[in-house]
Length: 272
Image 1: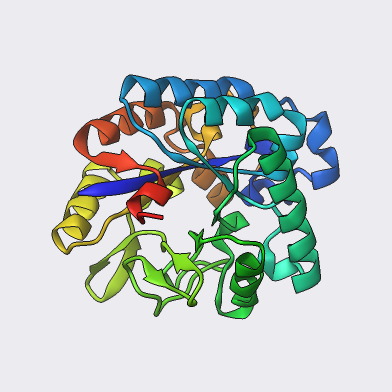
Image 2: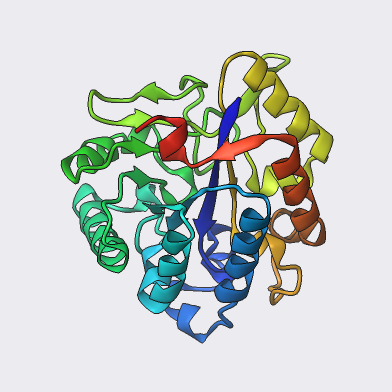
């Protein structure tokens, strides 16, 4: 089965997990490492003959338009990851729409192509922020990939969401982040910290199980997750573990994943 591969294009300091240690106004002062890590991901994808959807943060596109152009030139899909990486739960509908408009204008000016896909920062399309879907449709987007069918996370989760891609409204598809049902619970198999912290064999088992049930999986990764040399910030133990654990192993696991499964862009997987 063809699964969907996605890359959330943000630098190491943009992560919500670090937001108490690095304020957004201090981002310009941080060492920007996105060019090296993103280029490495593009090299791996070219080597594996795989195309992915890149959800680009507007803040990154403003400063590195050449990276957006490089992604597009290599045949990958460009989606929007918003402008400032502010959680949707902290934005009003008006603020979200303005950030969305600005990010779409940036990306479409660089590539000359219509953007049809969206992923919210930290997957914060939740029961409280479902108003975002109507705004996405208003701006011509065809799909969202932000709903996480889990109940344990403090920032995101729609526990009763369908596990397979579905029409969340008449105009917009939702490709939920992938989970498998184990002992009555939804357990993530979709990438990021779950991919780094849990054994690789669990991710492989989960994707095989989802595919055997007729469900394509959407997998996500951040460029900073293949950069073990990134600056280290003093964090509470749990946050530090979540951000830094197994960074040195991610690239090898990612290569293995691309060898074990077939991947394509979200747009292609949904036949849009």
